[in-house]
Image 1 (tube, rainbow, N blue to C red):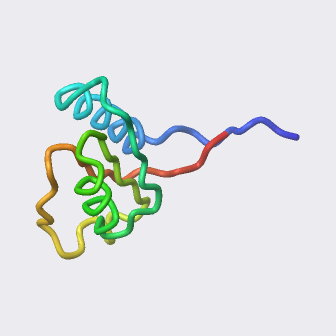
Image 2: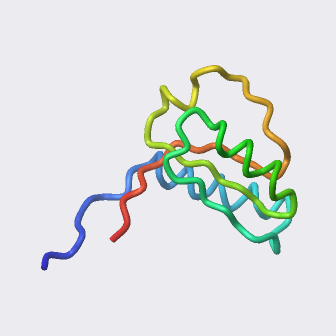
Length: 88
C-alpha cells in the first residue's frame, strides 16, 4: 500500500541509457526481447541467434555472473547489462 521509494542507482541509469543507445544504433524499430536474470549470458546469446530480427537485452543484477567466462562473442542484436529488475 506504500509507494515505491527505492532510489534509482547510477548503474541502473547507465544500463538504461546503454540499452536505448544500442538499440537505436542497431535498429530502433526492431522488436525487443528482455532476458531478465540472464546469468552469464548464454540464454541471451541463444535468443539473439534464434530471433535475428529482434534486439535482445540480457539483464542480470550480478556483475560477477555477467563477467564470468567473458569475452562472450555476442551478435550485433544482443547486449548484456548489469541492472536491478525491480519494477514499481
